[in-house]
Length: 281
Image (cartoon, rainbow, N blue to C red; front, top):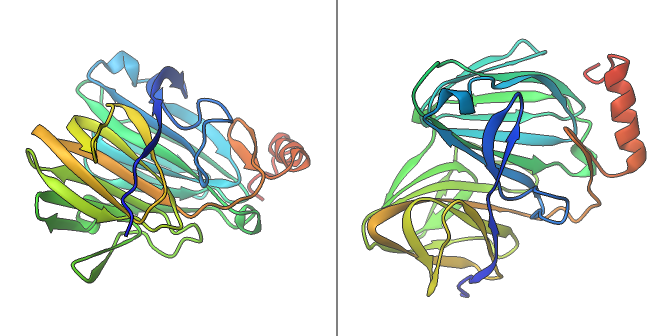
């Protein structure tokens, strides 16, 4: 067994998206800052309504999946398929854009804290033109696993601990994503499995923690080196961090805004389909 070390740190860069929502973007700041199969990782979080109130009005996607995890707050998803989903504290929305979806994500609060993450997960070429889909995952449907030193909310994937395979709310994806929210007690030391076939990262968003002997930076994607496990130690006030890993696709990525395909010609086709009203046909 080999412990993974810290390979690269990608600090979250302040930017905005949608109609002016303030975010910190680590993965996806530019094309060279991706981690196959992950395209983008945004953190949003503010107690100032002006930072989020305009939301994400109706917009299109093609060729990938979005995973929105709400730590605190209330947002409404609506799409052209007729789906409506209320994303609240601890909930997740897993949207497959596939061949095309048009959706909006709008705040349902006028004050208070809104905090969470959105991850873009690429699809392989063979799946980019699949039918669009949407899953609204309630907090109670996400396994909350007690471990020595804290607990794990396992949003996606499978983790084998003490010889027992534990499955997240989402499994069966071709990239076999693992998405876990780790809640560690003060000074806890935990060792967790990460498939050696996967690219992976840690994202510390509360407290302090280290990976082996290396201190993790807050609000940054800490990219992991090779190995099949991680050893994390929390600070004196505990820590909350995301573990995100996935099996790389190894295909060309061509992105134009909300469209992610394999060739320029496919991007041009997506743009033409959107202009002609055929993106979701």
